Image (tube, rainbow, N blue to C red; front, side, top):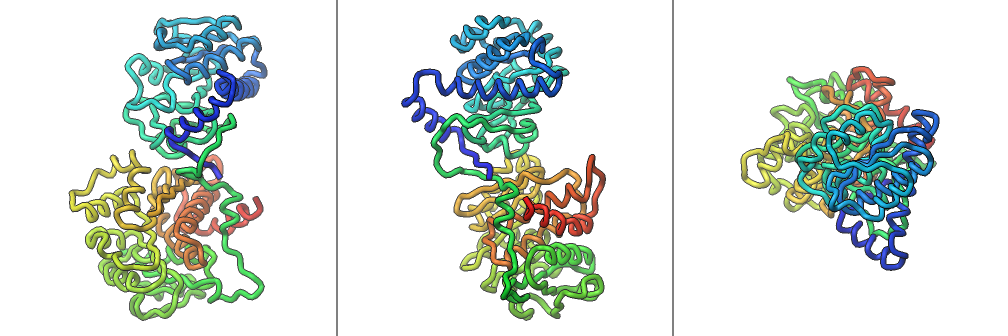
Length: 491
C-alpha cells in the first residue's frame, strides 16, 4: 500500500532524524536517490550518462539543494550540467559548491536558462519544495510554458502543486517523473496534482512516520480484501445484495447495476424496481421481488438510486429504514441532497455515498443550506470535497472523477490508483455502484468495499479499453471484471 503524509508530519519526522545524524546526511541520501533515478532515465533514453545535457532548475532552500547535489553527482559521471538559479541570493551554498566542484555550469540569466531547459536531455525541477503554496512565482512561469525535448524530473513534488491537497492554484511545471523522499505526499496521488507528477518513485531516506493520513491500494492490498467463499459457503452466507434501480426512463441503469453486483462477490442479487422483466431476461439468476426494499426480504446490503427516477425517494426511504448497509448513487443522491443529512440521522448501519462532482455539489448544498458550489471548483479540490461530505453526512464517500477519493467519517482517506479516462462513459457509475454494493453485502466495511470496487472498476476499464486504448461500454467494463479479479488474486 502506498502511504502519504502531510507536510507538517514530514517536517517533524525530518527534524527528528536530522537531530540524530551528521549535518547534511539527510540531504545527501535524498540527492543520491534522485541522481540514481536520473542516471537510469538517461541510460534508458540515450544509452549513457556521459555527454548528456542536464538542466537543474534550482530554487531556494533544501529542495534546490537536493537538485544541485544530484546535478553534481551527474556531472561527476560526465553529464554536461547547467544549474539555473531562480533566486541566486537564496541558492543552497553547499549544493552550489558541490556542482561547481564537479564541473557544472551556473547561470542566473533567464534567457540562458530557458535555452538550456529547452534543449536538455533531462531537467531537474527543484524550484519549489513541499512547503510551497500559491502556484509558481512569476520568475518560474516561463519554464512551465516553455517547450522541452527532454524528460522532466520533479524533486519531491512538481513545482506549483500543493503537496497536501493536489490543488494547482496557478501554473505548475509538469513532470514526467517525480522522485519523492521518505513518503508519498497526498498531492502526488490526487488530481489535479497527480496529473502533473507523472510516474512517482519513492526514495527511502529513513524517516520514522506515524500512521498515514492517506493511502492507495496496490494489488496485494486489494487481493487480501477480496471475499472468497469457504468450503461451507452457500449463496446466503456469501451475502445477498439488493438492487433498487432503474425506471421507465432509465431501464438500462438497472441492468448495469445488476451486472456489477453479480460480479462483486455476493452469493445472490435481489432486484426490486420497474425493470424486473428486462433484468430476469438478461440475468435469469437474479431474484426479483415486487414492490420496494421494504418488502423485498432479507439482504445484507442495498444499492439504491441508479436510474431510479421518480421512485428514487421512496426506495431510498425504505432502504435507509433498514438495519443493513446502504449504498446511495445517482438519483438516490439527488433525493438525499434534498433531504439533507437528517435523512441519515439515527442510522446504526453504515451508509456509502458514491457521487460525481455535480452530485457532490447538490449534497453539500443540502447539508449546508447554500446554493450548490461549482462542480469545477469541487473537482479541483477533490480531497477536501470528499472529506467535507463524509463529515457532513457522517457517511463513507466515494467521490468519482479523474482521481476517485474514498473518505471515511472517521478521517481515513484512500485514493484509487487505477482507471482510465475511457471510463467516462454512460452507465459506468451504475456498474461501480453494483460492484461496491455486492462487496458490502459480502461483509467488507464501507471504506474497504468502496476502495476495492474502485480499484477493480478502474482495472476493468483498462482491460476493456485495451492498449493503447479505445472507447468502452459500461457493460464491457462489467464483463471485464472477472478477468481483473483473477489478475488481482494472482498478483
